[in-house]
Each structure stands twice: as C-alpha cells, then as structure tokens.
Image (cartoon, rainbow, N blue to C red; front, side, top):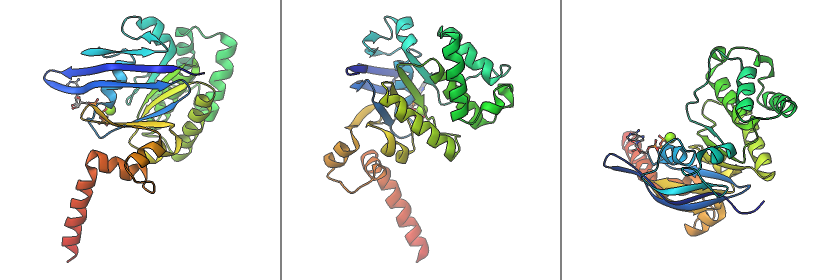
Length: 260
Ligand SMILES: Nc1ncnc2c1ncn2[C@@H]1O[C@H](COP(=O)(O)OP(=O)(O)OP(=O)(O)O)[C@@H](O)[C@H]1O
Ligand SMILES: [Mg+2]
C-alpha cells in the first residue's frame, strides 16, 4: 500500500491570458487523505478537473497509480471517482437506479453492488429514499447520493470538490469517518474544502494553493512548525498565508472605530 497514487508534474492551466494553475509539482501517496485548500478562485477546481481528465492541461502531466490521465484516459478513469461541487445527476432515476447505473458502467459484480449500495445508503441515511426519484431529493440528499455513486465502485482514488457543502452535521461526520476508514484500507482521497476544521481533523496532509501556486504542503505539524506556530490552528495559518488576516484586521479596525 505504498507508492504514489497521484503524481503531478509541472501541471498548468491557462484560460486565455490568465494563468489559473501554475506549474504544480507534488505527489499524493496511496492511502493518504489529502486536503486541497485555497481561497475562492485559487485554482482548486481547475486542478481537480485536470487530474480527473475533464479539462486538458495547458502543459505538464498527471498520473493516477502510474497511469497518465491524458495518454491513457480510460485506464486511468477506471481507477478514479469524482464528485464535483455541483453534481450532475439524472433526475428521472431513483437513487437505487442511479447507483446501479454507475456500478454497471464500472462492471461491478451484482452481489458486490447490492451489499455495497445498501451499506452506503444506510451510512448516509438514504435507505428509505432509495426508490424515490432523484428529482425529489433535497440539495444535501443529491450531494449524498452523488457521494454514494462515487464510492459504490470502490475507486482507488477519490476526488471530492467541496463535499460537505449542503451536508447536515451528522452526514458530514459520517462522510469524515467513512473517508478515514476507506483511506486506512488503502483508498486515496483528494478533497478540496473551505472548512478548515474538517481538514485539520481528518487530513493526513494538506496543500494550500494561492493564485495557482502551491504555497504550503505537508502534515499539520509540518505546516505549524514551518510557520513557527505550534499553538495555532490551521485556520490561523491559512489566513496568514493567504492574506485573509489583513482583511480580518481591517474588519476589526472598522468595528473598533464604530464602537468609539
Ligand atoms: N472556464 C473558465 N474560463 C475562464 N476562467 C476560468 C474558468 N474556470 C475558472 N477560471 C478562472 O480560473 C481561476 C481558478 O478557478 P477555480 O474554479 O479553479 O478556483 P477554485 O479554487 O476552485 O475556487 P472556489 O473556491 O471558488 O471554488 C479563477 O480565476 C477563475 O476565474
Ligand atoms: Mg472550486
């Protein structure tokens, strides 16, 4: 269970004249739960779309379990699952039919599918709605069925873009616990999130991207010691590195003035 699950080499994306992602170079190891953090517009979704073969890089390459995603897209895509920030589901399918459809695409044996689908639906409290049409689901329920669909074929590498948006606290905790368990069993997870508390609690390592560059990469302890801030939270470090602290200072100054 060792070795690189995701290998990113000089990966870059330019939209017109705008360099959205600039020459990224890093690896995520098998079994790692990796948090990809950064302010709005930093390049997280662009990077994830390049890693999942949905967006062609302007330069550089990405490998999934040693397979180049752009040279061998079908082989690489068999290994991965991706839940975008706005999942595109089939409204006229029931939750169960959707999971069955995903499993058939990935040629999962029927008996494995049945057990896996029931387990996932139960973890996310969707068992009673499995035979309802997806169009009748709430936003959070759609998010959860998309996550179930991603996990039903037991991917080697899971990409989640903002997975906790729309999830209630119980579901967010179920997701956190499940991801930890699956990564301990060997799956690799690459997750973008703005919820730094979640990243701090569950990720083995985090990478912070700002204006298309990785500005910090490592375990929580490594980030804290690099910044000389052993007692600070990831949120403190994130805001300091990404300049959000200046804005907070400004807000404090304005509210202080208002109090006088
Ligand atoms: N299709 C596109 N065409 C042109 N520019 C784009 C496109 N998609 C993204 N961008 C730009 O690329 C940069 C990175 O966007 P991206 O969506 O990757 O950010 P993000 O880190 O995912 O942000 P958020 O936290 O808001 O989801 C932004 O400046 C954005 O405006
Ligand atoms: Mg995004």
